[in-house]
Image 1 (tube, rainbow, N blue to C red):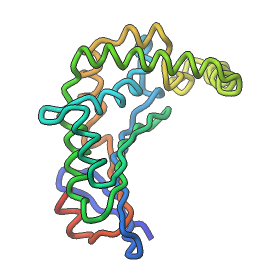
Image 2: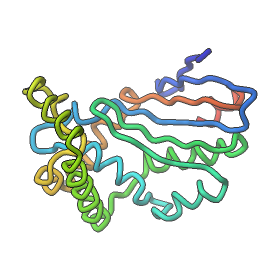
Image 3: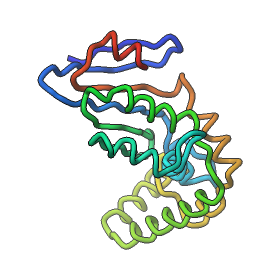
Length: 201
């Protein structure tokens, strides 16, 4: 059964110890997504999710993925209408590595302008591919029609125009505003000891 603890800075930690597992999954969940975006910045949550993997003050994008790959782990993220999550699945013995890298991308990303320009192109291609899937397109148009005027009506990907218009300054501002201790939670499941987990976090 899952338990809840709280770090000294107030961040809630939801965890479940599974002694029979040899691995752990750990995720940082941020209460942000297309629902919370203002007019003209649609898609900023999703673009920001991409950018957190593009380098920190001490790691390049390549180093972020290689350090997890080298110990057989997996790192990824997703953005929805209400939540953005970053997570690692890794052997239990590498829990400190997982926490350190997740913390590094969460707190110390540098948002290089050249990488923002590249990722905008990647996201715009995603939008175009998504537009070619009729059932997904219809779902989005339905949401927009039914929920018109609400942030929930926004597409997670944004539009080509809105993504093109996102500046580095607006992204950093959004990151500082939304990625705060009172707007996030950590969830962990797998083989670990509660006291060690809380100490590491």
